[in-house]
Image (cartoon, rainbow, N blue to C red; front, side, top):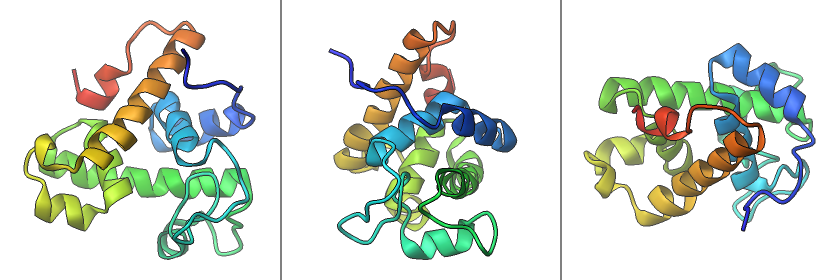
Length: 159
């Protein structure tokens, strides 16, 4: 049974932003689906903002410009991409080119991953399986849906 049951209404934005920031588009799309099913307006239980459920403090640091609006899909997606690229930069230095470490840092925080997880098994299950694993599953469905050749595992696991 597929996880993704609706078409992403923001695919052109995701593709543009992903290309601008060097992120495989299907990973960014999958993350947006995992975070908030591509819903632009609701606040999360902890005050998270928009499609990518950015914490307000994260939004303030990574928003694409001073007048950006977290409710605007392009602004929220771009802020998430900017933060994810920063997480990936840290992850590459610490763990290598695997995107899964960047997503773990995005979700659990760079400080937590840095101080509490020297191996992938040290990352809590809710981050490893329920967050990163779900992103991988959605991204794999996107590969199939768009008839792409390379499996997403190459991006997430550096294979």
